[in-house]
Length: 294
Image (cartoon, rainbow, N blue to C red; front, side, top):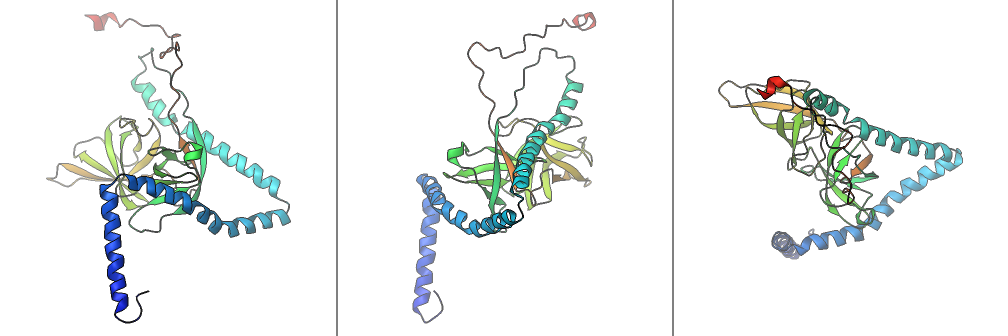
């Protein structure tokens, strides 16, 4: 397009003006989000067509070897593994919580999180962002801000939704941050992406804070975006700089960000039905010991 003569220079200038115009329109007008969602819907068939040859070859090889039944069973077992992993990931948090809150007998009931499974369609080719596209969209109930998990931990959150696909911002992206807490002692911090798949930054950790290498970080649920008690990462480095108020703490993500292809999209727990008790009425109120009443 820009290969011959002086005219291509004007073409390049025109393209630059159009690009700046589009960036200005996206910054100033909210309807650009709707336009982007519609364009994503239009691009969805292209993504499907691009992946079609590999899908056809895979299906043909399996048909020739008469292994379709095994593949279907493998798919069911993989979804079952994701389901069991999603339930098991809260075990560490519940154990620590029971130790700290054993005396609280009148506790609120915790319902299981509804979810749907999703599969990876593509990864963003931009080296400065860490985003991916999955095969669940508006028709499946996906929404902006929805948490995304894999079998090991938190992957990220949905940032854009079209009819047939969704874009996910991963937790290691430099623009992503979320509140977490340490399993061992309940200390709360903010984890921010570093731009690298294998590293997360734990922000503003006081130099005297009780945080150690090996501590596991879980979602704290304080921001209201991510549910409580899901694995985020593990502390791998704590550096103290004399004279500095904050320590430099690095964690590695719990999720397999570079290898996972199957994910869970979590939904908020259902609202209680009218007349349903918010507390477990089977528990009784226990009077505090007399020593504490004095």
